[in-house]
Image 1: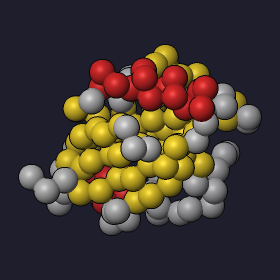
Image 2: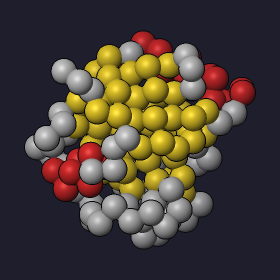
Image 3: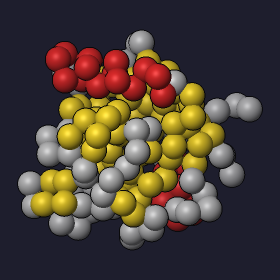
Length: 141
């Protein structure tokens, strides 16, 4: 199983992340099966200092595991849907995961291990300049 991956945002940002296999094995397996994964990262609407990948009705086939509403910087969450649409949250600062329906909890399934020092810069770019393409892919260790 892939344990690490790359995350590229726009042309300027590159991160290395590890899967949280021990705490969210089903979520990690479901996401790894979809690699490479491409989407758009936008500024979160209700969650504070975080980027958001709205995924609509995408079904990862998982429920809640290792769920939190207060992720640390660089702790990516996957919300499998229910009260709100399926989504991924990428925190770059103080975050309380929420939607227009209220507070949510998402599965902490990825942790950025390299490039954390650039997350605040990424947040500023999202906030002031808008959406950026994002790509997740296996890391060839």
